[in-house]
Image (cartoon, rainbow, N blue to C red; front, side):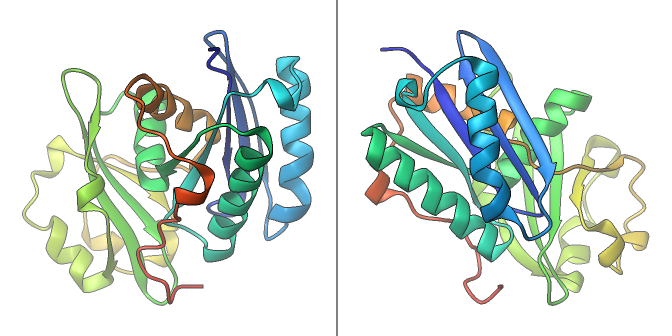
Length: 223
């Protein structure tokens, strides 16, 4: 069976689509600014054209399952489930924070990542991701929703020189100036960084039927 993967991300204000075909990734990204439902489907069609394939040729659907924008996660989950059901293919849901860690590796070759994403109501999504010697990420169990004081407590004892800080919404986190990290970069999740996780999970047959996948809100009250 071919491994043609269609990946989508609408977890924050950016939308992105990626297609993996014959060890090559075709991808598009755009600032959706609350227009996810308007932009994501045309972006899927454009990416299919870039990859020179038809939708029926896709073998797997992958998506960013959250955490992130409540509505954006629901949109990605709904589209991914609908496509997987109509195409009768497996589905893979990947953590948004893990996707951001992978992007940090792809762009900056950092292996010890502190990921932060502003989550409204004076809180942040947070995780510690480490890429091990076999190039696999560990850290999904560290994902949590923290208020600003809890964030300070989490990182005050870390050896900051050994970690790089990546994420979005830093300007809204009023305690960030006290963290004193030298390596802080703003990044956003991208569907192309879903592909490595998808390939690993496909190899190990860690995929689901569309009806089994669930979004990861971390907190159902953040909307």
